[in-house]
Image 1 (cartoon, rainbow, N blue to C red):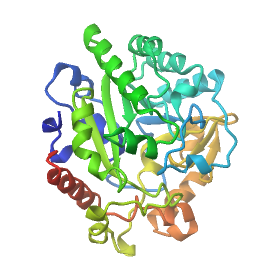
Image 2 (cartoon, rainbow, N blue to C red; image 1 turned 60 degrees about the vertical axis):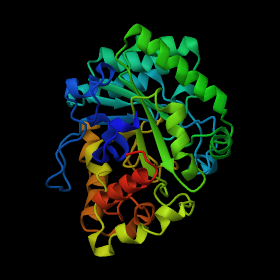
Image 3 (spheres, helix red, strand yellow; image 1 turned 90 degrees about the vertical axis):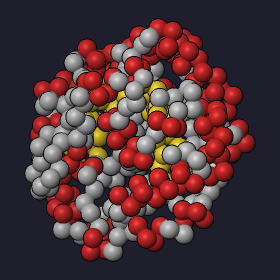
Length: 354
């Protein structure tokens, strides 16, 4: 399967939705011609409505992963109500939004109505509905519900190719459970010829660098594609010192000087809705520090170019990142995207995965 993953397919987070291989089960995304993001050629404080909306259906999680801030989160744990979700889906459709992500800071399958949420989005006419999960809570019954729900793709956060490192990194997770669930999903999907994309992600760090080769042996035939990335500091919320020497020694070459730091496109290319109805500009805003609206009292349309969001965009455009500590220390704005992709490609090549 890794032979299908070309250098240009070593992508940033949601870019995987624009790439497919030749197998029939992987043509769904390209056939639908999904436009993931709005136009970003000329950024300004006012922006066109985006094509994508992300829902934090819950900020609860069943794991305590080493590289994730969630285990330190102070914000109250909660669940989005169906009433609020339906309201926002309706407003999103009216604005021309086409893509719905049902995850941000938590594990989507903890939400008791996650399957209903998928169906609501598809029945509203959303072109692409997708979820990222740790896969621990699936079973045969839930997999059958997934295949019948209309979900377009599911991405498993794996980050390992061996039981020992997996369970060390993904605290409270069971390797055997993950493998069993993914094997069953792939088997049932193929038997039913369901058009569900099965993807995986692998965040490279020193604890799993030596697992890259074995990862392919275990999961290569279970997923359609794998998204590789370098461990990040999640908006300066976690320590990113767990980089393997092979990458750490080259990071300085891809870091941009301060005058070349770039605005974060999250402020322009998607809505991100917290479980309580507040809007944030960041998908890893675990403490809801960067909120700009409340959908309990306002609409998506009213919030998208409100004074608060325009002020946040202005800060990014003028590169006054010091006014937003979470942004100022985030590695997303400090790295040359193309050089980062090249570094990832080189890492995969050295491990015979390109």
